[in-house]
Length: 512
Image 1 (cartoon, rainbow, N blue to C red):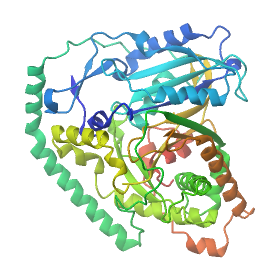
Image 2: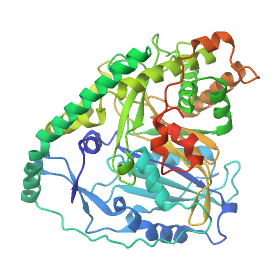
Image 3: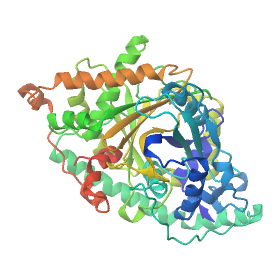
């Protein structure tokens, strides 16, 4: 048995039938890049061979009576792989619209808590997507956010995927052993045993806050910083209403070289800044078309990885967050980007001053559970000013192609949860020289996500048109740009290849 952290447990408490708390995505497999006999049996055998590589695959949740402590993970004594690997077919003609609708339906259904919290659907009949041969396949995956964040989720998929068409041999010994589901008395005893370490944890937390505050003060003395928006100061918008269980999903695919070109033409900009600017421009156009653009700029929440070197390979969530003003009232694309550059720089500094990912550790579990359920059941999220208007999460992927049981993964699109008051989540994923921008919402909030996707693509075109062909900015633009901050990303990349440099910038928004 192992306990969930407070942050991991919060995704359990916040979950409802309208707000499933899983992440996941779509993997497209081109039939021309797959073995000739590739089918569901090939896929199932491959997944079964990789089960020893992560305990997440066979751990299920056990909740403590009366929420006296956060839940625990135990090895499922009744694990059955077939429950997690359904085989389905996409409706005809098997095009992108049909696949996106199918994925939206799957993403809208909560996972079964009596089993390990993941599923992978093997989808046949992908016949009508440009660039893919008839008879291609898709994998639609779901895994609970209590198990993984974006970084550990990418590591989990790396356990299933290979860098060559020939699958690597798994030599790791399978140490999984089923555990008996503990009784109520055992769970309550463990809950009280965990209370003893809280005073020491609180003392360490206070020390971290003090250290962060000193660093922020030093940074502000060295250079002026734009403070991030405060929670509950984001403008009211159509994106911040109660959500329904009817998901909508769409994704667009962009050449990474286009993103890099914009970044290189604008001093101090990062890849993350450019992606935020694309989303900002697309949201501005889309909301204007609905006569729903707020008078004040939209505010995005961008998760930041705080996973340390020694925590790589561990599952669960190791994230903090920053709030970013998206400058959606700014009509000029290039000016919007330069303002976002300054906004993200200030947001990073302020978010680093407080270990926000640990605040929930000191809230009693029964209080956290009751508050979360009250918040979702009363639809309180649409009754107050938004904490922020949307979430934009950036997940790194490898720059080289990956293979699933010998079949090349052609494209990948991601999803993340929405909830009352947060009706749109954008997932950005880089892979093999391309970047996907995926939109998850519901029918009542974004009924036509393909329109928003098209607007995001046009936003990139506007940026490209605004940048001089020489690749340098004019004197006025240069004067608007903040100076580059000092990068500390190299330490995070020691175990990564040099080729992952561009991709990792998408995860934590740090400069390279």
